[in-house]
Image 1 (cartoon, helix red, strand yellow):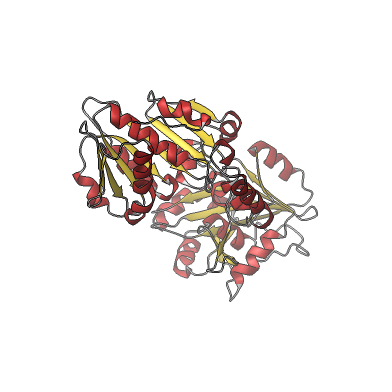
Image 2 (cartoon, rainbow, N blue to C red):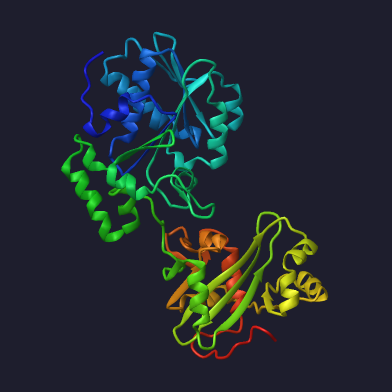
Length: 423
């Protein structure tokens, strides 16, 4: 085997095998995939193991990880000792080690895998969370220490990778603040080895490539964040850039300080995969500030069970403006003593409601409304095939946003006055 020069930023990663998880995130051209592949080959040369290399789509493996690992084998002068097999794709080592390749789009193929002690998930952000958990179950060996390498370009903070390995605001779980990783470059937390890299860490890149990455900032800031800086963030155009989260007590104190607060409640209905979302909000008309201070968010609930959960509204008599597409449900709640009314829906109402909410100077949400925060904090517009935003469609189906639409059914930022929450 010939000597191979490597990028200094990856030296520690290459030879560290003391942890179960290795999470590599970085920008374009940082050489993270190359060094993940090199790490894998060096390990399998020294120990008899079976390693599994995975991407979401099987057909992408041949031109990515398989080609990369084959290139590394040539670089190391091992082409006469380590054998690459085309069909089925495998790499076999003289000591009995082997690398097998599978795609998560063919999950039935995973069932035949046994004694895998290392898994490399390339572009792990493309793999579904359920697939990640399935791979954890396939990672098992009676005697050898188990390892999983995950490599990816950073994507949205809504992706499972970010929520699992960094922060999940909805679940109020923080494993590692990603800003700490950008600062320190390498971190070890709870058995996971984190590694951050950018193009500057790759000493073999031409300067012209880095200049191209820099140019992205002029025409695509999102891509520049991902490709040049290697950082997670919000992909796309945020629907509510004025949305902010504050402590619950602070929000309630601000509402109490409003001279004539406009109070509203709105509800969106759902059952199987969508949600019953009920929101209480208050408007500071003079300052054009929307406060969100209470939420109800559940699915797979029958109407009678939901009515039990929301019994307090029967006592207060608060008007709940709800989705008019569910007249039968609204009638049931009215019969049960709820002051529920259908919100107006019309051609173009989604866009009009969205524009109405966007007119607020600030949208301040209580930190207790975790589902509202999860849906709205980083909500972005959907885009068409030309990359143009669709003004009444979003990256997810935000049930709490619909509830806010309905709550503000008869609201106009410019001229609504008075308090009509109890009618």
